[in-house]
Length: 460
Ligand code: ARG
Image (cartoon, rainbow, N blue to C red; front, side, top):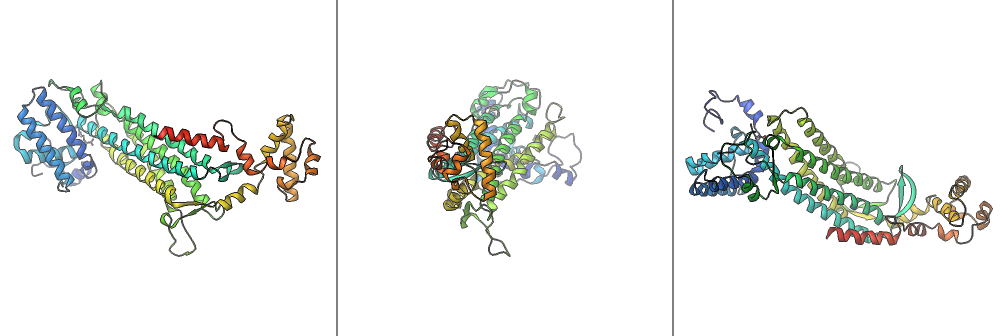
């Protein structure tokens, strides 16, 4: 910019350079350029359709805008900081290219409805990408689950071994979370997909515009009813950040498990070289950097959600410059959530090897079949609470004797309760313990197979 300022002749001196930089959003909002051009093209066509400008003028505007998009895509568009933001940068470039007619583009529009339009178009696009990323992640979970229906793993409550489960069942729990995430993003999209274009600075416009036309051109499903609300609403950003935070929280929980599964203490999983890193001084180490980074990045995304809630709190109607603060956290959340989903998908596809032998030992070396002993007696008519207390005693005496339940002799069993018979041994093998839990949603192999089929139909 060569003039003293960007706005109007009302200003006599140029901005202090530090303040110009402080005020500018161009370093980060430049990524909105394709959406800004898209919005401006729809606006220019609308201006011609309603007779506000001529067809010939609209054609020139549209052509100029398309050329700017090409310049941007070819890496030839480098606005400087004095342009302030992407909207001014495009408008100035347009006028430089096509002359005076370029100055007509901003008729019946403000940067306030413009930036709202751009941001919504951007987010729509990103939501579509993220939902595709979620589908890839779900597919990786499903593939792994299908290979591990018969692999048993200890199931925990309070991080204490509780009951053995099918590894597939465990993986499918994360599939379910991702399914809710996918649905939630679809829901956010519904309220992102509403056009504020034509609401002007805050109060609408004196020109005979056609808001439905621009909304249709841009693929919006609806238009805002109230112009004040339209230019200052960022609920859709907050809703998105909430959805992104939940995706991250889910990935982070899974990451935490992978981290301790890969520790020497658990030793349930081996990290393959393509997805693990080494230490600079301890040659024996293999570090789970990928899940650790996902767990770590989760804090940042949840922080962006809090940040945006705080931007909105106390914001009077309508547009305030505070709203420029909606962008960096949003852009970072989109990029980070996308990359975490991709990294986790790769980790699941090629980075993990479950140690079957170790898992088999793990489920056989504890008292996680105690509930099944109680169930065994309850099935023979002993009231469950009484059976539960009896088994509690057995666990206590076995622990003291350094024995597992499978090591008790039939005499010992029958001394506890005469209803015990030889089939108690089969009833408490880890495999049988898992297999028997065929209530809907349980870990029984039949149920898990069923769940995999349902998951398949829900994702295709
Ligand atoms: N760069 C601004 C933003 O991101 C665009 C809107 C500016 N509007 C204004 N009235 N200053 O919010």
